[in-house]
Length: 474
Image (cartoon, rainbow, N blue to C red; front, side, top):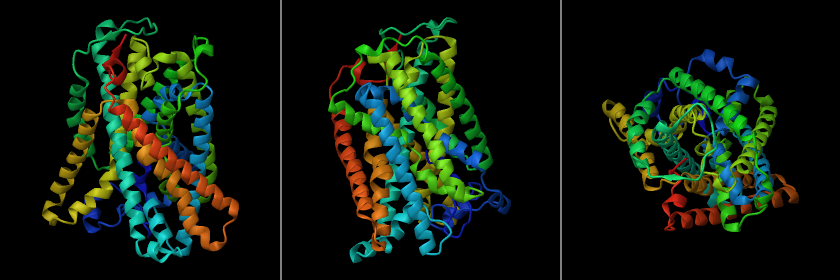
């Protein structure tokens, strides 16, 4: 996730703060990370352990809980192998992005460049005259993809919270102290899933109005605690009494594998966080160790949860593993805790598109209307994510669609192309050129075919039980 861009720095090494965000945004519409924080905060920086914790939190979200269904879509053998391969490629592309940004910042004598600036400066310094002339479009494209990705994450949050709230509320009369596995029994929902989405809408609007960095840090800490506790209880349950997996397919159809690709890419949400995280470190030269060690733990966690979850629930695996948990107070509390964590994480995810869009809007109004314009845009963006969730209330397919459309471009397509543009004039090896081209082609194929398959599934008139992941199961 891109939560750590809250603390990013600009080209002049000025750290950011949400406390003076309104002022800084009205002063500049071209730099999305131009806010200021106290000098002491800059001097301290993040330690290796703090950076590792941020990296882990940025990559552990709702996508993680959808991995068991992703394994079902790929197969018991193909799924873990493919997820591991996608993880390795994603980490490699993160390293490429770091290398290109460092090289460009040195070449242009800048302290720090963000993702969009790296793309813009890479095009500006390449040999092709047409690309140099239109270099600013590199930044526009990256910013657009970041907006689509982050608003997509926020829409998924709406669906995830509503899914779990519906189960908690409508199963309240069946909850007991003893935990028993769910049976496949469909219950007619008392209230439509959209009612729960509309119910949480005003609370999320109030949440994104908070622009104080200390308050948001408290929310982030609370989200970390609830997420960690929830994951521990989920693992404790899925490792017990795993059925014989011999009847599970080793390889699924290629149509469902395309949905797996989108979900897998969606889960590796942290590609946009690596640059601001490195910039915030007390010793940035140590970030490579943090990146490789942290992402290794994340890949292991992903493969284990996805594989064990699919083996535990088999063909009845739901869009989120929390929807498969037993009906008892313990695991109802898991859903509640994870939902609370995702609720507070919404503000951190939301900040990324907000800090790109709001400066543009504020620059068009007078200073006296700046605060009103700021709050109006925030409200409109939250409502947009809610409307998107209401129109497409299918958690699994929206995750796959967002992953295929934008996450694949940010994680797999753009970094190798940026490396080609940045280092080609400096005699790149043929192996590196071939490697970058192959990764970009793989990402492009996954983007095109994954998007097609997700859209195709969305328009299919499937029975409510299969099509709507928000159905209640007992």
